[in-house]
Image (tube, rainbow, N blue to C red):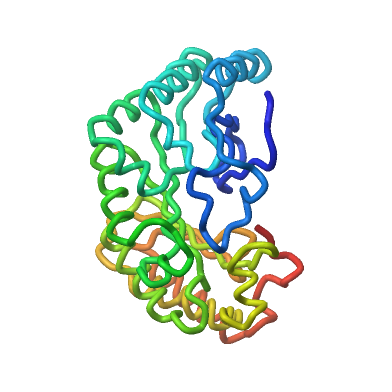
Length: 291
């Protein structure tokens, strides 16, 4: 298997076969993200992708999960995606799940029937970076979509039979927009009712526009206690969710939480309150945090 540059995957894809079908991110303007700063967006030639699949089928024939990389690989057209999905299904008889990163624009560029076709071919799970449900925060970080766009995208994917894992980023509104960021995120999640919700915590990446704003005193990152306060506000603000699995197991977070929001919300809040009462000794040390 051949890989170009740093390959990023969600924690839940740790045991998946990672297949790059694009390089970089077609948007690549989010002010907080340095993941693909040195990797211009490219679509990998289909023949090259098919060669990788053939090689993987010989080396790791028992693949059960595949994650399609890089950033928003759903940007590919239906013909290319269908070719890749068909090849994966032919190569791996034990394959049970194919997943992918996507942004709202790329989901909404495809019809519900297009997405249903991809679902029939095994593309079951989409990871979408909501980041924030507050439009002002989204505008400031140049996300390229509104909360309404992302709500519409998630619901279109769900109607097509796909599962969606939504990712939001604590601290992205800074101290100025902290409450609006948390409240808007809870409202967006309620409107999406996703199968999965993961919260990460902002870590300023040197070289990114947001890091430069922080250096210039134009952006103020909340203290750890305030970041956990945001997390509490998001959890408390969720309501009407069907069965949303919730995680803060990413290494950027100060306190790991896990549960189903419709069932475990009181326990999650109690655990968070206990950590806040204990203070920093209950938080993950800064040296252990990572992206």
